[in-house]
Image (cartoon, rainbow, N blue to C red; front, side):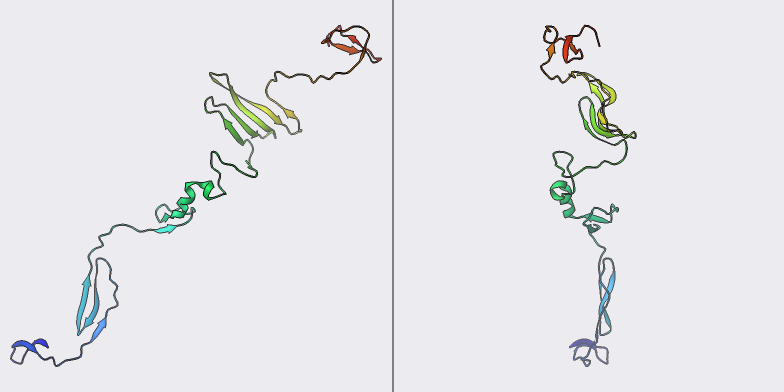
Length: 210
């Protein structure tokens, strides 16, 4: 049954002589803020209209590495955050700045470079150091007398290009390495006195300075 008029223009529910209606599905895609035709039925368009998108959030891709230089294009993955949380525990190629252990050799390239051990109170700093002259050793930037720091950069000990050990500091408390042996003397000599060899394997008391 359909609602239609007769030949005299009188409307009423009447039998529909047309029993076949065409239906054509639309190919448009629904999108926020647009009106599209979903289908056509019997020549009539079936339409839908969506309002503007109420969600203003911007979604970004996930970046699972630390090499991206774009600050806003992608978001860092949770896995990378996990690695960054504790570098040495998650990645054995990283060493913590404190309390960690490194196996193997640490190489510092270039002349004048140092690995420094610094006193945070007096700023005294000792460092493994090399310079343009080919000297390599332990270097100090100064000293602390208990109340003030004095800048006085000197080598504590270093090896020069000739392979000799040197120091830029004065040495105190150095002693001779003594050894004892039994020798015949020409006179009675008290212990601790300096003696010299006469030339026939006998010893005499020294009477002059060297």
